[in-house]
Length: 65
Image (cartoon, rainbow, N blue to C red; front, side):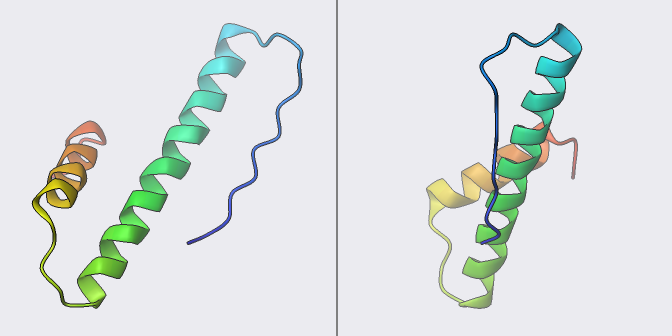
């Protein structure tokens, strides 16, 4: 997995900046889930149903098929 560093200050952000931070966090989370999915598939073991549901939900949220 790729390490991710999130550095935040204590100052209050404007709404646009807050949204940008949230989008970066979501993007990092989605990337981590995709990496995990790829790792599991490379191992050629059965994917657990709950993992498959998570991968499917991520694709739905991201607007992927």
